[in-house]
Image 1 (cartoon, rainbow, N blue to C red):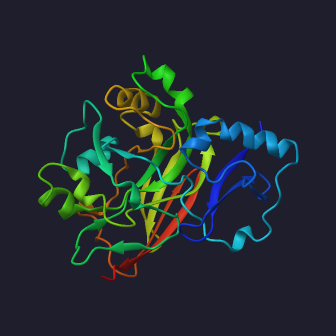
Image 2 (cartoon, rainbow, N blue to C red):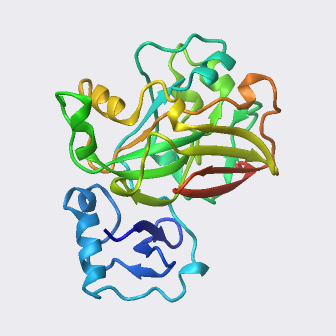
Length: 288
């Protein structure tokens, strides 16, 4: 099996689909698809990419390293999020670990490239970071019979930063968290979509930093609800479509804990997951 990473390179709104191989060479996918999106993933896009590479049919992108990296999936139709899926994070949030998955939403237009700036809403005082493993759906999932069926519906994984404004999330939310999750640029994602057959999602180290200082350092082994359970569980309540993203929750070490200051203009966040990549975002005040 050839190890590959699917990526999207170029200016916002003009990204082109590419594949990067284990030796670091980047190849254009323009001959296979207009974009890395749900339609491509549902049509066996990853398998067709590997076959085209094997046949030598894909041209090299010579200037790949000079191009902006976009989010690895274009226009996700949904960004479903899981709250407090690590017991230690639930504790630092002042809550008991959940007995069933807590679900909330981010607007899909929060998704930006892995190294794009994160914009602070005017007057926001409690903007926080959250490194998360993101699942990308590759095949429609509805009413799955058991968690054992979930793997067949997962295209791959990527790194997600579920940026959150805690006052919006809690003080003015009416009990629904999405106000604090859906501000513009609040979901940097990437740098690549790594196919599921290359990843053991049950034991990945995930970390975050602010201004070079470690904030989070944990493992997906500490998840309360694992990937297979989450996909199965969600399929009982909604239809998961190809290209949908599931943010699977964050471990302890966020500003909400009271141990660290919230983000301000000029701060630099970094998030990283073992085998999936690293993202870095500068925090800026939004200009209205």
